[in-house]
Amino acid sequence: MTVSVTFCGAAGGVTGSCYLLQTDHGKFLVDCGMFQGSKTVRELNYGPFPFKAEEISAVLLTHAHIDHSGLLPKLVKAGFDNSILATEPTCDLLTYMLPDSGYIQESEVERLNRRNARRGRPEVTPIYTRKDAEHTLSKLKPVEYHEWQVVIEGVRARFWDAGHLLGSASIEIECAAKDKDAKPTRLLFSGDVGTGEAVFNEAPEAPSDIDYLFVETTYGDRNRPNLNDEERRAMLGKEVREALSAGGNLVIPSFAVARTQELLVDLAHLFNRGQLPEANVFIDSPLAQHATEVFARHLNADDARALEHPKFHMIPDVEASKQLARITSGAIILSASGMCDAGRIRYHLKNNLWRSNCTVLLVGFQAAGSFGRVLQQGAKHVRIHGEEIEVHARIRTLDVYSGHADQNMLLRWTRDRLPVSKRIFLTHGEEGARTAFQHVLIANEIPAEKISMPMLDETVTLQKGTLHIVQNKPRLSGKELSCDDWHNMYAGTITALSEKLQGLKTGSERCELLEKLLRDIRSV
Image 1 (cartoon, rainbow, N blue to C red):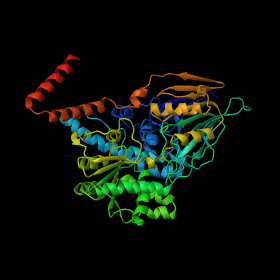
Image 2 (cartoon, helix red, strand yellow):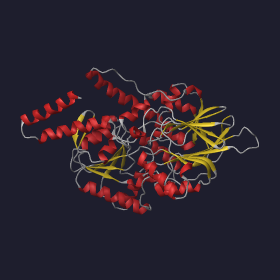
Image 3 (cartoon, rainbow, N blue to C red):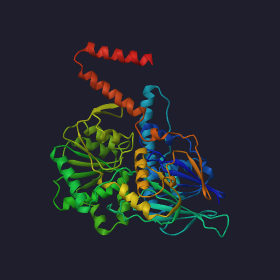
Image 4 (tube, rainbow, N blue to C red):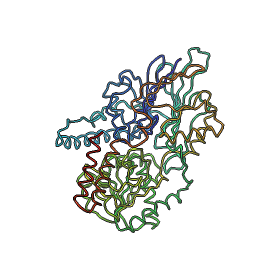
């Protein structure tokens, strides 16, 4: 059987995970994720799929995170009418995550259209609506780990615990050979590989002796310290104490699913041991509230009780969220999104970034071009909802909560899959990260000719003994996927110009600078 794989996302960048597999008997997807990061990257979510949705016979879903699942409602809206195979916890999480994503699409577009109306620009429509997302839920088909599932004729798959998130999976796929006596072609898609050290997850597992291995490289260029629970909590406690002692609020942009629950368990532990000052923790994310309920059903009794600590306050609605703006000190606010690109976190940043006694603690990966990455890189002026904000708050990063394996963990996971008889594809990483991981693999005696770094929209045909690569015209280049775009540069230029103008002493100096800029612009 001839098999081809097209890298429709997370190739040259981290988000938008989506693989299109085509065999002699049909087409199916592994993941159908949303692109995140710069506006240029996010615009891919609005364009057409690089395939016909109605021709897709099934979707195999590694886990519930939006960069792996977030375009499923768009797929259904475009004509997909078959099953989405995922573990039961993943299906439980998606029951809340996809409708929440639809609501965010509608809310963001409504706000944008109000601005567009004032600017005389045309209206835009959401990628999909909450109703579209709710309709998608009927396509979910729960599967068990380790049990073979028929995907299409001649293709079966089974799910292995990836240790990244509740319900996350690496997916093994077998494609039958034309000759019944020949061995099937075996593919393994890593999904997101966990650390084996996260609060809720077991160590990742997966089979070995694979023909083609597809492995994520999010942290392929770095290692993190190996910490036990007490050491991790000590680091969190130190950050919280320093933030609150400064006299302001502590704002934590946090992914609503998994990261928020991990933080809550550790905060509860610190409160119970008297290692934190008196403070209230506000969880301002409806999705986080629902996800916490799902986690509580699947966790042990101690962790489930920790999620109900009396210091924790779920914020039920928008009006209650707005009331948090009145709190100027002593509060810990957890809100989504984790990369600060959408949702209620934007309002909390708007209310706190300009305060020198406030702290923003980044606890997750910040994709290139995302607002979180802008803050992480030390921006002094930012724009939120069209308003310029001076950044006086402390910006801190605590990377010990990442659900992604670091370089050493990825190396160990990859080596445990050996032998890989045909090819290893490095995906789901920015260019620097996966190039670094490629060098690590080569240094560990994996031949360079066995390693491929596919780009967005590239197609490889897996034929016996050969690998045929088709360089389709990519929607975006690797550079565009892995760096700031012109929108980021424009925002940075505007804030830099404002700062420069404020620093000049006279009106004539400001006029002279602006006239020079206008001359330069008009001469281009």
